[in-house]
Image (cartoon, rainbow, N blue to C red; front, top):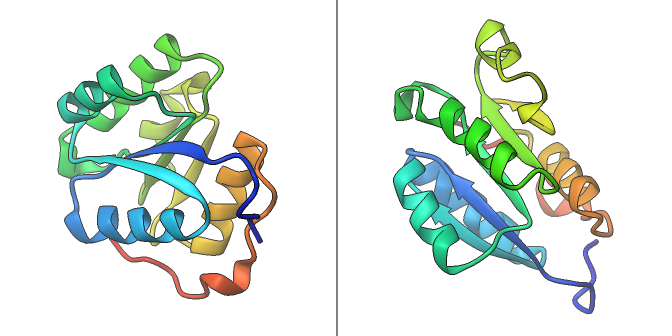
Length: 139
């Protein structure tokens, strides 16, 4: 489980779906992440102008009409040392076109223990106890 004394990491969640965004915000807040959230690329960039993020978690699906793909490329170019994780229902060609822009791709519906483990690993956090999050999030 993430330790209360461990370094608190900043996570930016970008998802147009309010329920998914709020669920992710809540889940990551419980395991010692400082969470920023945005509904789209413009809002995400505005938030990043005022506060840094150590890792980015982006919806790549159609709710943002392709904006997630463009934002992933932009963030990977601007912050090459910070992981960009994509969330999608389509692991096909759309995701492959991003090439090295993504550190990881997580398929929806989200498996919270797997997602938390992936984010912890990418930012060097101690692993989160998977028993804290046993049901998948749906988008």
